[in-house]
Picture 1 (spheres, rainbow, N blue to C red):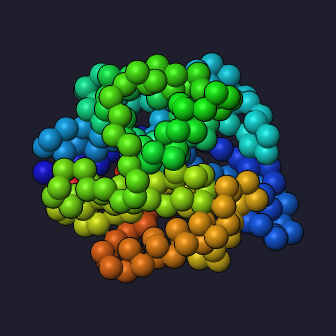
Picture 2 (picture 1 turned 60 degrees about the horizontal axis):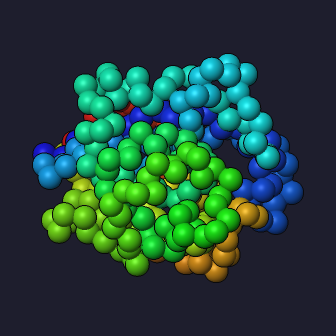
Length: 251
């Protein structure tokens, strides 16, 4: 039986919400969640995203990063300890994409097999000019990697599927899970930032490609319908507050 653990991985305040929706005149603040997800499958553990860095717990007032205020109240490592496993027990590690709110603790998973869309991997590791947050995941550079070019069924049983959803970044991906009791869940990554953003097809000003972004929203809308799935928008604070957090789990 598959188990899904929801881990807290930081709090985010966007200081200018108009940046999350191209063409919006609303420049107010919006609070965002930042969960990450640990999946136990009979064939191995999968970690989805790495959140903000655990080191932020040492800065109680948080930090400012462009239009975002970032903070951490507890560490990811402490939540692993509460479950009774260590990051080295994780068999597979996947980024939705490599923005810094998703990479903070990635070096914990240096022994795992990395699963990324090839275009995202090439940006993360292949370019001469590395992203500014490269230090978050630099220890993964020598790890075994599975480079994807589109959708992919991890174990061939339909329970864990990577869904290519480019637009926010060139190689962005989402995750489709099928649990026995909970049913199908799509973890969106940053295809949208919150429910209203998703329903109105709002595109952040800093997305890589607007046409791809719209196509990915439409792809997820169709997938939700086809799979009768719940959509978990990763940064949606209101939705996050309804979830049961680790060490509890969904199955």
